[in-house]
Length: 310
Image 1 (cartoon, rainbow, N blue to C red):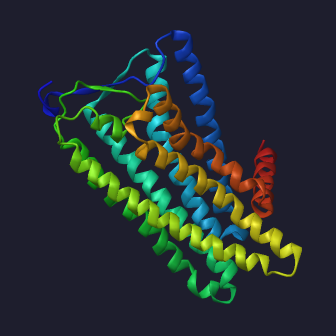
Image 2: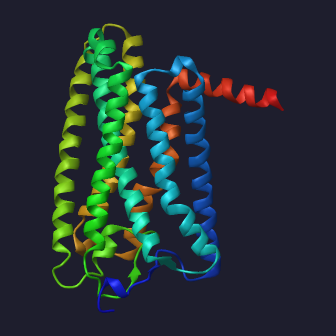
Image 3: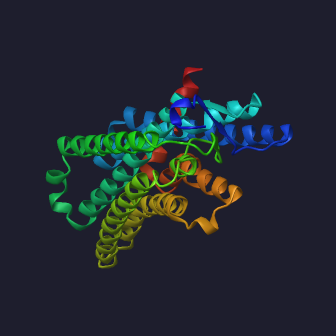
């Protein structure tokens, strides 16, 4: 292949060769996908329908669930379809669209997780200023900023990646079109520009991560000063789910994009990609609803209402 203009499709190699393993891959992904659809769908419906959940914390959680649904829908259905139809192909435009939506949704999610840390910080460390700083207009503006930043960021990454000449074939060693795997197909040093952008991304991720960590240091310092155990319990039930989600998201994402080439192997790359792109959207609803009484009550009401309609 002389350059990317002669490419009209890519081959995704991140699935097994044997039909039995392909079926297992499809069933596993289908189970995770349905869990993500159900969990996030329930949270979106509960937050939208229950007026008691019309607060900044749940508004951001609603946005997170929408982003999670988008992220998992960008990669998993195509991978399942390829396994079931015993094909590896994805069109050039399909691959570009997958890269665009995946980077858009996952970066918007990360910016949103940073905003959610700020929301927790204000709620616990500046409770008297909370209603003023986190009014509905400010919340909408923050969420819009996260979505817009993700969009602009994705345009930059996608345009950069697909402007690089590709001459190392068209096989992508992953179950979806992932930027590091596409860069492996580039000619000579043309990929360094996108690599530079990934390093800048890592710095931005690190800055947001430091902001989240500092927010939580102050949150936990404030919580430990609280006299009542009830205050402790309420603060920890608000913060620990968010911290768990951030830790899973950042650790797997950073490892996927910044691990040294010597550590790279198709099996490890596949496992890490599943951990940062497929697992979080499915487990986030579980993490957030596990210790949250208000959300549990809203979900119970929703399920009871659904049952009464039958």
